[in-house]
Length: 439
Image (cartoon, rainbow, N blue to C red; front, side):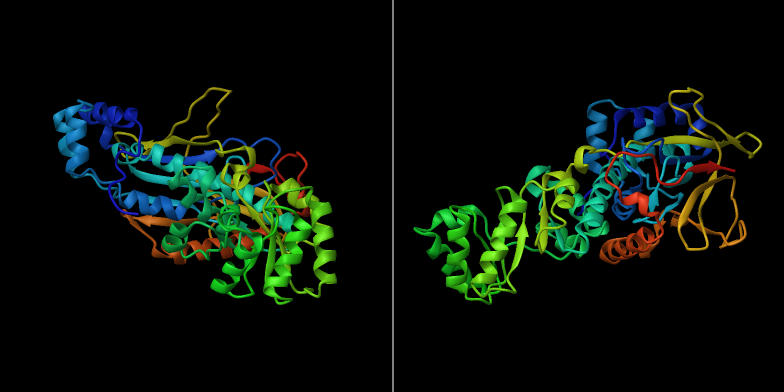
């Protein structure tokens, strides 16, 4: 995606910059942090997603002529600030959790160091990206865990906005989904795409047989035929008649799925189509997928639930100033003191304590730099550092962006899931699976 991202923000960010530049405080070196005070209700872990997209959006955060003219016309900031914005590009440093990492309450997911004016303008961009993408990834990871290794595809583009659809496909892929129906996500992020036909294709033709023959003629017998436009049993019989016993798959998009799937499997086997797979795509979420664990389902397609975070469309992250330099050049920790919205000031580093079986037992957040490398913590336990540098001097580490960064995030997520205690994958409501401790 190209074009300026400079107005993907809220007005108060620019008015703060305007006032801070006027009195000189805008040039103070500052440290901002994005974190979640809590996980969505009942969730036991979250999955970080959106980092690669965020780094690319920050690179596009430039005020070009069109943006400056709009700000001037609407008198959003003073002319002097417009001149400053004309030369703006983020030149600071960013550290954070790797994309695909598990996170817990208080985890310092992104830390941004720059002048106040440079960093405060990124608040909405940081939160809109991480809140949505991490919510989708966290829901998708739950679905993947109960799919028990069966392929699962993201099919939710028609249930969200056009831009969110691309982001959701990417986040779901990082979380372990195997493919997406969204072609732009495939082009931009290198995600495998899938899709054959909807009910409209069947209804277009004079008969269901005509529709099946047209699809098989175009794509061969290994295609997936949608068999529930009319009568499912008749549709299955006709699908095998048209494509032969080499039919790739049938798709079911309605009905009492456990009962229907069992009947379709028995019918396919009876017709000799023993290798024909069954894909289901009917308003699935992690609970319905778990309910199908004992059914002969071969693949799932998920739409609404994944692109809406399965009931939690935002991850609840916040972006707070946690430290700034004083007039003597020393760092001063700052934090909001409200007991309802508590923040902890100061630069932070984080590590995860793993026991002798390499199972995560505790999220450790160090006020200050904390230990570096993989150090001994307790007999048999190890610390795995969690934070990496994502951007230096305004330049993103290429390992974290583009299709390669997306693939790396997906691989990292798979590794991290092996560390979580088995309790993490229970769908019932529960507390975060490991505690967060500050040192």
